[in-house]
Amino acid sequence: MHAKKRLAHIVLQTNQLAAVKDWYIKVLDAHVVYENPMISFLAFDEEHHRLAIAQVPGLVERTPLTVGLFHSAFTFDSLGELLAKYEELKDYGIEPRMPVQHGVTTSIYYRDPDGNFVELQIDNFATADEATEYMRNPEYTSEPIGPSFDPAIMLKAFRAGTPEAELLTRAWASTNPQHDFIEQMMS
Image 1 (cartoon, one colour):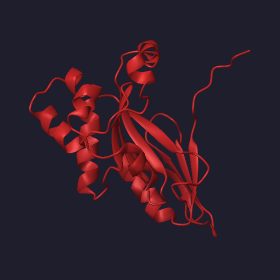
Image 2: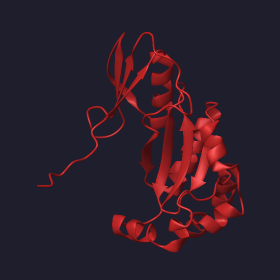
Image 3: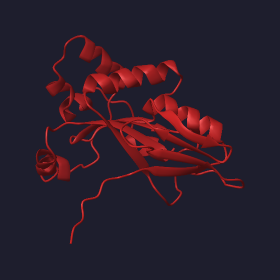
Image 4: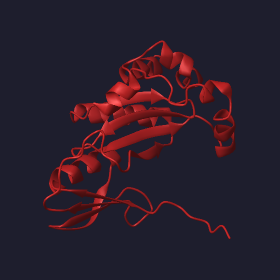
């Protein structure tokens, strides 16, 4: 039997609750649902909480080579919303770690104060079936990660009226690179 499932929430452990909580409030436009000195529950959509952050004494810092969850990802409805969030976060001093045109998604990765990766993305296809089909074609299978891009250039092109269909391609990203993806993710 295959029961219907959906992701309910993620729980992070930290030794700097206030800083991590404030970061996620900014990045996800979240609000505190419940909080005590040991844990904070955050929501940003219809779920009673999507993220909990637990203060755990004695933790050691995470490194890029630590075994565990690589990243969490959050989907925006449109490229305009994703780029507006990018611009808002820059105003807060929160810089992207690595923007990547995966083909199936347009993604901007950030690191939270504990070093956890958070992907803010949009889906580049209208349906999951279309995305799955794309993931089976040679453009994707030969390079599943995809090229990086400069989100500042993308924002400028978006505002200048460059069609979204063009901005959401690997070809566009390849002409506006930022850095080497793997090198940036591991540093």
